[in-house]
Length: 227
Ligand code: DX5
Ligand code: ZN
Image (cartoon, rainbow, N blue to C red; front, side, top):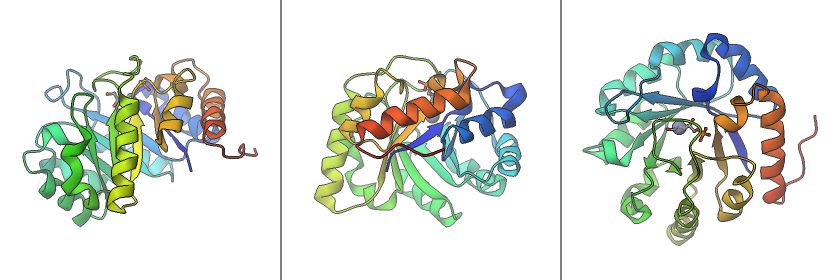
């Protein structure tokens, strides 16, 4: 089943809880939280204190996308703050196997993220460890960028690899998910759709989330959600 993961990166941080509630009413089922350190990516956002506040505000799972160096040093803090899913970048982990194991040991669902220029095949050995694979379809760091088309091939490759290996990890896509792209993304096989600008950019998160999810479900051949 396709799910919409509103990315709070494009939300109004001064009214974060209201923005999250609106996206939830529009059908968002997991909240995507972008953590940036100004080193791994050229932007700085937020960390465990904000995750802790979000945890109190919503019951939805919090999907923390760590765009940071030395992620192992912060796994415990995200667990304490109440994160549910934590994903680390292939490109940021010196010992990816250890990082994924650490996330699991802290009771969270481990995910691995690959940048646009990183090949899917590099993940083969660690795929049995992950709950989700996040395919970046823009270079991480900013919301509102254009979808990189070759990401569709990477999603298809992952679907194939999952079948070949008999695994059940979920395929998440992040960057440039919008009305113009969502149909092809879903048809390629992605099921967890992160959207920042398309949900929060227009100032109508509830309506825009609802419309985007409806388009995604239609592309997946799933019945429309009843409100
Ligand atoms: C980018 C972040 C994304 C971002 C996506 O580095 O990882 O989660 O919010 O933004 P949109 O949906 O605006 O492309
Ligand atoms: Zn993200």
